[in-house]
Image (cartoon, helix red, strand yellow):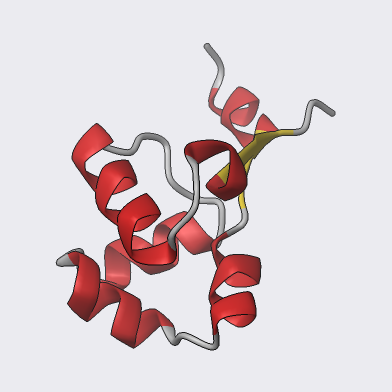
Amino acid sequence: MPAEDYSAIHCRLDELLAERGMSLTELSRRVGVSLVNLSVLKNNRAKAIRFSTLTALCAVLDCSVGDLLSYQPA
């Protein structure tokens, strides 16, 4: 799969954080994922994500995977 195909997956982390009044720093602390890694995810530059990270994010943000990630083909 060409690298540009990854861009069809959009991470809504910014919107979810804003809705919950939570900072990326607080999320990092609560989830146990580095600020740098969350920033990569938030800015749609991630090429992969662990299920354990998805699970932790969904638990802390009280959301489903579909709330966090969406498919937006070009």
